[in-house]
Image (cartoon, rainbow, N blue to C red):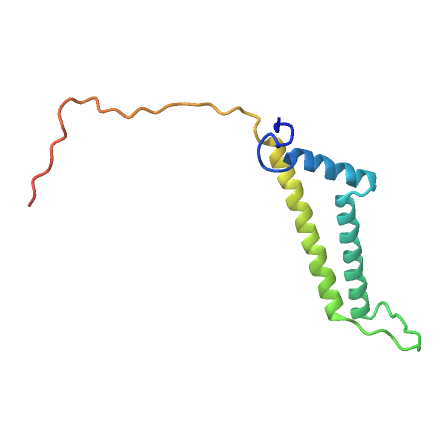
Length: 130
């Protein structure tokens, strides 16, 4: 009578694969690809770091509304470099994990049994105490 109410595995929710499928469908309906967004964000940080390097070297001078040049911002430069590196690391780890997951389980595991027996009927001789 209550069997149709209880989840089959007793965890209290849909299986993990169903949650992943639902999340993936939601992202697709929003036309959102997290990897594409990460790559685009990484490129923006990389171009901002390059822009800050040009400002620091004096090759690029941007003027404020009052006509004075914008100052180089070491903090902005550092933040752009560190965020670009962090995103690159995340993307690299994702692709390496993905490649590792695809290469795993290509060979089925082989079960084996190890039996430890003593074939010699005589007990081992103990050494005399000194």
